[in-house]
Length: 155
Image (cartoon, rainbow, N blue to C red; front, side, top):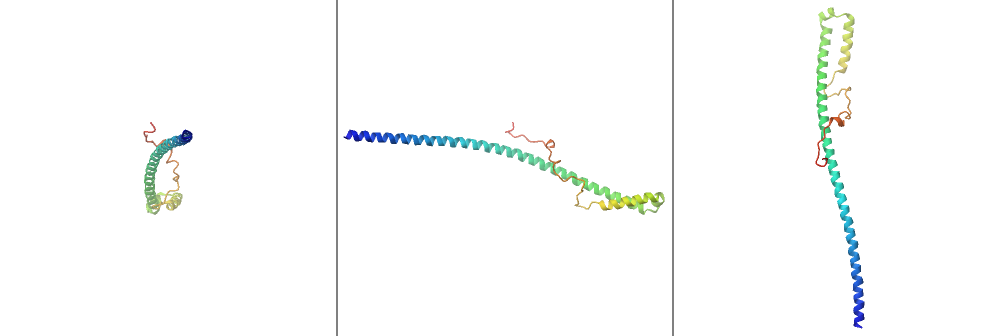
């Protein structure tokens, strides 16, 4: 009878052992899947970081290009303002000069006065932007004008 109990107990232990091994196998498979998921997530993270680095370089170049273009624009606007002031002085001088009246015909004086009137209305006020300049940044950010830095991932 003890032998029967021992066999029953042994059979029960064997079933428990098989069940435990099956559970360990299920857990091992889950761990393998999680490791694969982790590898994929790390690869995606590395790709995203590389893409972010490339985009940061592009942004840096675009900002530098915008800054260069803004400086050019401010210089051009200052030069335009300076030239318009000179032109106004010449108009005033020609129109107010008594000797200019004798040299200029009535028609020429009329044309000069109308031109002087047009230019005084157009004179740049400091801080006012010219309407002739395109305000969009599309021309400033064209891909052909920007040289991109290479990263180790690109090589």
